[in-house]
Length: 491
Image (tube, rainbow, N blue to C red):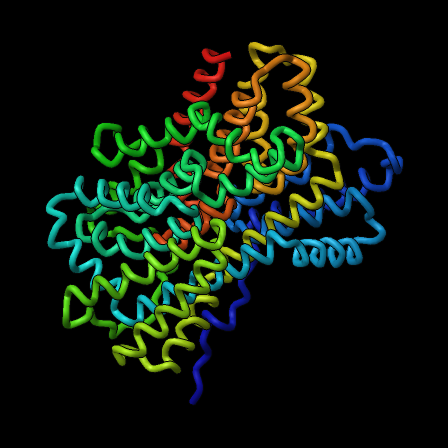
């Protein structure tokens, strides 16, 4: 005799919300197609250039699906540009992004960083470091302070900070029932905001070259102009103070962070829906505690040293660190060559979601560039600019643009040729303009839920990008408001 499984045999009816979202998506597609068909070729898009980014924000907030939101926003923008050639437009933008030198650098750096961390994890080195630090850390506050201090020490690049610190500290913060969201906040807040105020970081090198390319500084003098502007990179300094207050429990938990911390104190440090980076369940710390710590510290020293030696190039640094680690672990017979090579592949696989997010963000930026978003926004606010309000307006506008596009480096290559001549015309000192732009770059990246540093910090800490962004937002807003007040006072 057979029995029927009524649960499996009964069809599931779509909910009302399903039909609502379906209608909303088709309505949005129709709207973008109508805009594209009615746009006169050669004319500026004006305020409608904001629509793809607004679609991304709405999609991500409703679904909490970051990668899908970015790609959908790019597609909507392409419907506005040429609805009859959507497939060709997607192919062209995809190829353009994947052939971009910056994207190639990001993919290689993130993939190899994931591979390096996987080797350190499988070799028991991260566990050895965590075990050694646990004996030194005696309280919840000390664990947060240690995370803060390590974040400042690893200043050479925000990617290195986001991945290495979160991987090595989460076992310690877990033991004191600190939520993964707060760990992600501590890590992310000592990433980009700290990198901008250290003149020997990847950020300093890149922006110094932009200053020279835009004739703001003479050839070879970009770093000098950058250093003069460091005191005016207010968002970095304010964030440094805010995260220190959070780490010392002087600033209370707010908003979604308060909820996350209450959950963690009840015993659940990792939020629902978060995926844990796990390279093996049977990993043990090195039997020699000192050597186990050195197995982590020395590859990090090589990574930082090689990056510095090769003109602050993290790609060269991580490649040298992997080669050193394979040799160093090999002579110890800590891991076989097969295991280490497999670990590199595993690490690259783990970085697929962050890389997809970065690629999606660059695709959205490419589409926004075609729509003229940056030029429209800056030109729209320029009539209200004066010498006294230019720095704060530029800071707020560029923060909003970085937040909307998740592209701090690429965006400024487009914005600088517009911003610097405008500032010079108004008589605003160059170092204040540079300070406002770099503050905006860090603020937008810090607060954006799909920026590279946000995604990497969340990935390494063990929470989703949206969970991290929502819990971090109140503290980022404190920094943004304080920085705006600073620029009003300075100007």
